[in-house]
Length: 464
Image 1 (tube, rainbow, N blue to C red):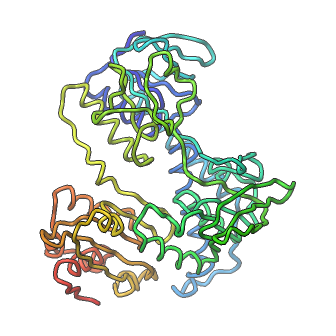
Image 2: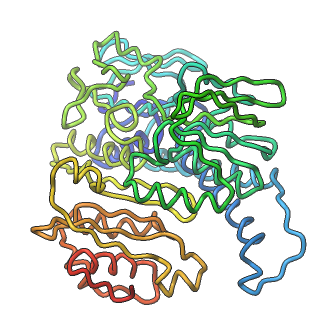
Image 3: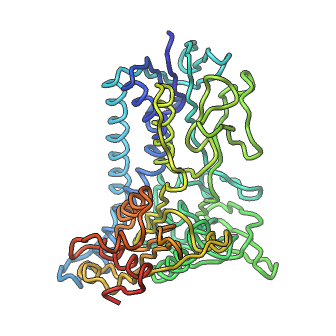
C-alpha cells in the first residue's frame, strides 16, 4: 500500500496528527506496536493516573471531609480491586474511542513495529511482516520511564509508573525517587489510600522546573497529607530484599542514609523512545539526549520525515504533542500553522492542582526582566471556603513597564482548568489590567485570577 502520510506511534500526538492529515485529504496510515491505540498517555499515563487520582480523592474526602459537610457515613473502606478495574474500564473506553476515530476518518491501522527501510519505505514487524510506501512520515513514538545506574527497575518491588498503575495491593510504605509530576501524582494516590509516602529528591525543591513558590506551597500541603520529603538527597542504589526494598542516598552533608519500604517508585523523568525505528537506515540525526533533531517546523534532516512530541525537544506533555501533530499536518497541506511553545501550560494533578504558563520568577530574574507580582490567597475566596478548598494561591507576573502578563502560577482547586484563562490572555498579549477589568462570575475559583491580576497591575486586590 502507498500513503501520503504515515504516522508511527498512536499516542495523543500520533493519532491527532493522523486525524488532521485525513481531514486535510491525505491518504493516511498509522502504525502502533501494541494491540491498543493511545500510546503511553491513554494506556499507562495520563488517563489511568487521573482515574486513580479521582478515585482516591473521593475516598480521602469520604474519610476526612464528609463529616464537616454534614454527611455521616458508616465504615468507609477501599475496594482496591474495584478501583483498578474502574481505571482499566476508563482506559478501554478511551482507547476504543481512538479506534473509532481512526475508522471514522478512514485511517489504515497497522499493528507492529514500524522501521525505516528507506525514507519512503517502512517495514512493519507484527504478526506478519509487510511493507508500505509513504511520501511523508511523522514519528510520534513518545517516551519511556528513565532511570539512573543503581536504581534499575525490576518491575516487582522497584517499579516505574507503569507498574504503579497495576499494583495488586496498597503499599505500606512507598518510597518515591523523584519529586516531579509523575512521582507526586502517584504518591498522592497511595498516600490517600493509607500508604506512608517518602519522596527522595536530588534538587532543593519538588516540581523544581516550576516557580519556586509552587513547590514550596505544594510541599506544605502534601506534608499535611502525610508525605515525608528528603530534598538534596542523591540516590546511590536500590535493592529488592524480597518483601521489602531499601534505598541508599547521600544527603547534603554527603552522609549515607538508608530508607526501608515495601515498594520503590523510580520517577526521575522520561526519555525519548526510538528503539526499532531504523533511523540509522535513513540517517535521521539524534542529539546527545536521544531526541530526534528537528528544525522550527518539526522537520528532521531527512526530507519528508518529521518528528513530534516526547521524541523531540521540549516539554514531554500530551497536549504539546497534539499541537505539534496538527502543526505538521497543516504544514504538509500548505497552510501556515502556529504553535507558541512558550505558552504550553504545565499541570500537576495533585489536590489541589498546580498549573503554570510562561516565565517563572526565577527565569525573569535570570533574564534581567523587570517585573511586578500579584498574588492572591485562595483562603480569602468565598468559593474556596464553600468547597473547603482553601489551600494555595494564584500569582500573576507582569512586565513592570508594559504590564503585559509574563507568567501565571497557580496552586489551587481546578487549577488545571483555570490555567487556560491565563494561556488565552497571554496568547493575545493581554496586560494584567486587561484581566483585572474583565467581569468574573461569583462565586468561582476564577475570581482568584482576577484578584491576582489586580495585585499585579495596581497592587489593589479587593478581597485581601
